[in-house]
Length: 464
Ligand code: TRP
Image (cartoon, rainbow, N blue to C red; front, side):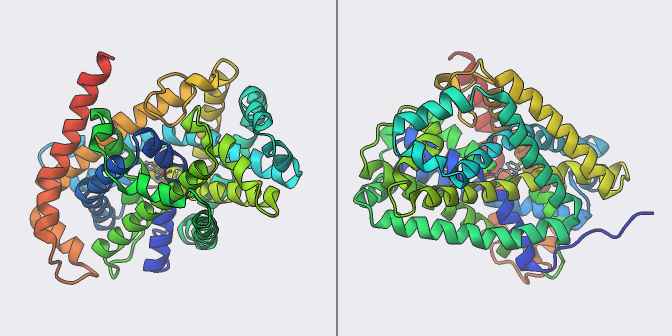
């Protein structure tokens, strides 16, 4: 007995769920500190070019594959590739995606769990106290919290339970519903923080930092990072958008949805930068480790607002919400593989996959544990091959996602056929004037750019 395939209630439901997947720790944490490390302007510009030239075309390709073949990545490639050169081998792209989803979720959820700790501390009134004395908070985060694997594991399990529960209830009643509640709240909190940051003296400098390009400050790894970050932030390269696209109605427009999702995701990344940089520049904070700004520096500033302890709590709630709609999409990719290909029930798939990933995450947290001082501990960054999170994130962002994205671009650009692609992109949209541009980007620009990254990763990192 196979159940009918889940569907979004409409285009808004799809947009909110997909934007929920895209907007996450990648926007609120990783993008600001990468932009900071790469001196702002030029990096931001390169990032935007990467989104336009590579990210958007690949997102359209993923969504169209999902909607056309009505399966998650493995099944979609099995069907789509059946009559093409390579045949069943194309399913490998799907397997790569499922594996990537498993791996990314196992460390992402641990980091997401940290926000629960901060929310609970705010509720207990303790966060305000610690944040009033920066050394205390720094000490708490580095020497107490990060050393306490048991606590981190507990929060990771809570986060995985929330994720699993949402996915368990299915496309409309679980995934979409959570996004419908959380995304507007998230936009609201961010807007509030943006307004606040505009009143701080560092606001002007933050804007200048973000939008004045200084290309001398970006080395070739800056280019790589910008590109990898575009994949990560837009949830591309492993079939998450493909899976969400498979629940989309044929009366909705893929090009329009893609542009809206990408614009929202990029906007939120930029807003996060404005907020953080305004604060940093206003208070002349000394940044020791940019990747820990989120858990050490920002609270010490926010606490100075009226009701500071609560403002801080709200801030971590925002991050938790953003992370939850992202972890949901990661689990959905893995679960829908079991549902589509192994013919499991949604219940069995979500519980089995959710708990396996939870266990794998525990192993990560344990092996990271006490042995990783913050100086080498940089969970989502490039320079951090140290630590289990760093290694896994490095593998995912620099290998799985770009390789997956490259193969998706090649398949859709060179194997799928112009007519099929056009038909799917125009269903629910009407004549697509930019089709030629899209096709040029997906056939030439995206594959060449991504291949260039992969090659320089191979050449560069080996000799570092
Ligand atoms: N895009 C999310 C973020 O920016 C993370 C994420 C969710 C993701 N699903 C994904 C990354 C699928 C790659 C692929 O935090």
